[in-house]
Length: 219
Image (spheres, rainbow, N blue to C red):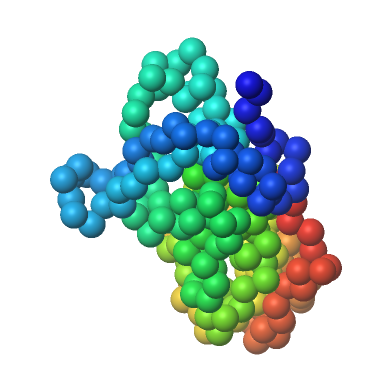
């Protein structure tokens, strides 16, 4: 029987997910990445294999194709325990955690890119662009650097970070050149020069957030 796929869906699908849960019983063990596989802090659980494959071309090829992993009963997800828990929750509910810092989703976004989970990437961008609950305009430089080192310039998250640093950066913030990748800094300074004068940069920049309706960050 052909397996449902979500390649053409713009968002998580309750109809397809319900169909998978009602028609398939195959499960697979998953755990988060950890140096010590016996670490009690690691995430460990089970999920419907077809559900994971539905939303990921990578896992569809690995677990349903001719690769060695296809016969595996367990996989290690390249995620920390918190992000792993977020992924499993999203697969079954289509929901991401509310509140908190936006950068909590960066690692999961990178994972979604590596495993070809387009619908998850779109869901994360919707959450990231619309979240201001942390009360801070900018993601931390350290968290941003981890994402930027893994993202191409064409990535929606890369473009969002660039726009955010252009519009929300203030001179009193810690100098970013010691943390952020050089390529991103070049893009940032070049784009910044198109928006403000040198006097603005030397003085203070308005803390104006990026309008999610005015900027589109889509794959």
